[in-house]
Length: 332
Ligand code: NAD
Image 1 (tube, rainbow, N blue to C red):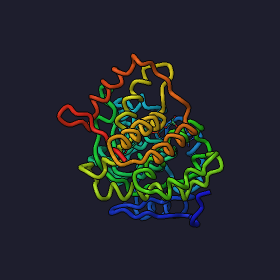
Image 2 (cartoon, helix red, strand yellow):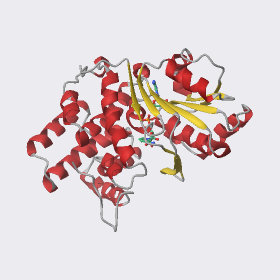
Image 3 (tube, rainbow, N blue to C red):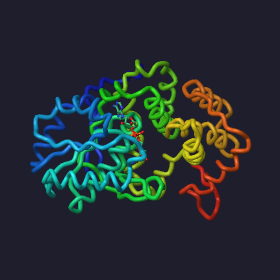
């Protein structure tokens, strides 16, 4: 399935770093050796420490320290950063040290932020282990943490030395996390690659997907967009398709006993914003139905009451993309 080219290792070259897609091999060791780092530490959360570190450790023939943090978005905060910086100091890391972030978007965003600020910035490598972080969070240089309950409100832009996207890690990822990350995969297809979109329609079972070519094709789109617009001044906003409604539904759901994962909420947002693209733009009814049917096939329905609508609208009114009080959507 989606096996249109052989990929033992695909390398996407960006201006100042590479993304390696496929089974992690000698390239990682070479980068570390060539960097002549005085210390190397791996940041992992409690799950990736248990499930992913054994996979990564086999590929490294160097000594490293492990910095282990609790898993989950609620820990993407200043307290955890303080712990990470302390551990880096205790390990004797200096400006010529390297931090490898092994985990999903939380470890990548927060580990990258800690590396970018420790001693005014040390090198870091991203080893994303969720589908969402492999196709989205690990690329584009956005790093940060949540502060005062506002998501990603403190952070910096800084690129890693390299990103290693290895589908091996997806084998232990829970099904709902794979499904959540998959929303970003087909979002990339919808905004930029009709062929990929058509190929994704053939997927029936995530366990059978040959992920490397899918990851490569999805990442090519993200790469092209972030290279043209690294600081989100224009084109990069296209990646926000589905996110105005999606973020509002996500925020709403987090207060209920049925919290949605990010990608699950974005999938709902993509249904709504595809409809808007049809009503307000040029998206055909056939395309709209195709998108809606596909999403409904993969994601369960999410029911909310009519009287919840004003609360969800309220969240949309606070969206970062709004200008002059008007809600902004990135439509197809
Ligand atoms: P996450 O990092 O919390 O990972 C989800 C869960 O999966 C965690 O419990 C984690 O421990 C577990 N896990 C990770 N890899 C695993 C594996 N291989 N096997 C088993 N369990 C595994 O969440 P996420 O969805 O990866 O990322 C969400 C974060 O990414 C959010 O904080 C979001 O703001 C951020 N994000 C950043 C960008 C960006 O451009 N920087 C883009 C999108 C999202």
